Length: 82
Image (cartoon, rainbow, N blue to C red; front, side, top):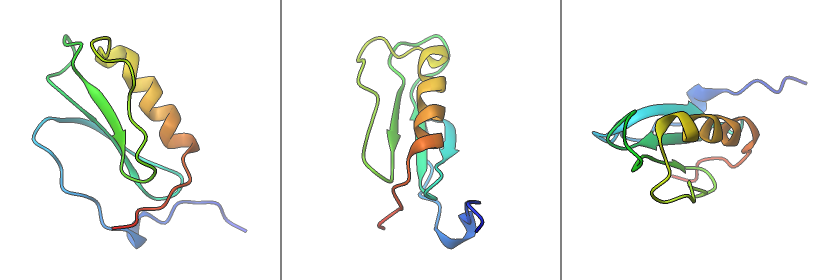
């Protein structure tokens, strides 16, 4: 049995203007990293599948949250409900 994600089965959500990175989850949903950019501590990530999000306000430099968002996407099996 294949565990490959079939991204074509789900519609990609609209991209916010401040989208920096978008990861696809193993469940076929998306994790968005948004914010002002690399040198800001006001970046955030949120998962469109399970609703989880970054939880370190004022500490979210891109180099810190990029691996967290990618790790979440690699493990989240929630499917998009919309």
